[in-house]
Length: 177
Image (cartoon, rainbow, N blue to C red; front, side, top):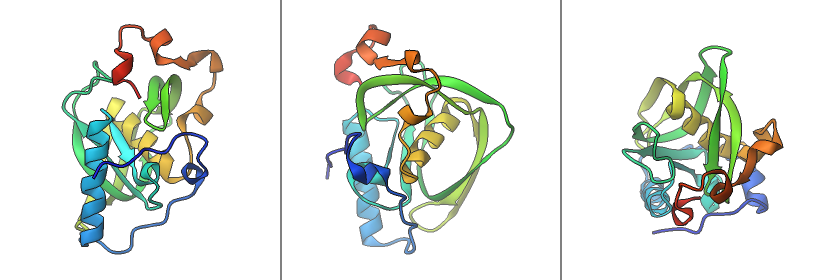
């Protein structure tokens, strides 16, 4: 089932999400299926459960190609539950981000360049990956949602925040956030 995506200003996006305590349940599988359907319909790179009003520490991400990020490399389709992120160095890099909960806007956001993410899949199997670049950026962005953080609060220079159609006229606005 495709869900409505909450927009910035909805107080549910500001909550700290609750840990998942039961894996491999019909409810969890349905949530993940719904999240993927919702993310794909919206051409998202990822989606966090709080974005559809579910206050659980569940994120999904991944794509082969994405019209909203045409130059982005492939990111493996991943279900990540109760994630823990650990930077692999102090190095950060700025990159342009958008968000399905902040439609039509993009901003230049600093993120760790490389990190390890750990957590579980929907079956309770442990996940541990070291990633960098766009993959690391997507994971950090989605995991921020679990702590009630939206990317505009991370922007250092608000002159680097604006409407996608103005900043990136080459992108089709119908395919953006």
